[in-house]
Length: 82
Image (cartoon, helix red, strand yellow):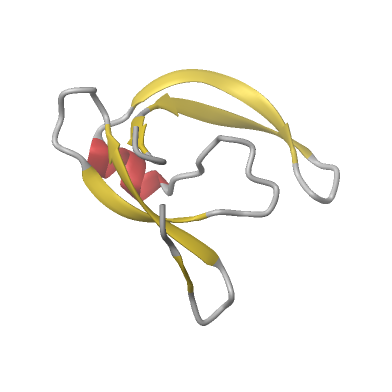
């Protein structure tokens, strides 16, 4: 997989995402953080545009130590060739 680095020195990859396995993919530019743990964060606009289904709520700890509750959604991603 080949990506690029933007003017803000962010590592970006092109990733195909879809709401359902058999849907046509939408290609997005994904910012891969150095702490990448396999989860993607999408804007609420992209979530709505793709029509992603809600999965569960989960707690997350932000960099400042604050705990927040986040919604999670189901999406299919084609990355790293699969």
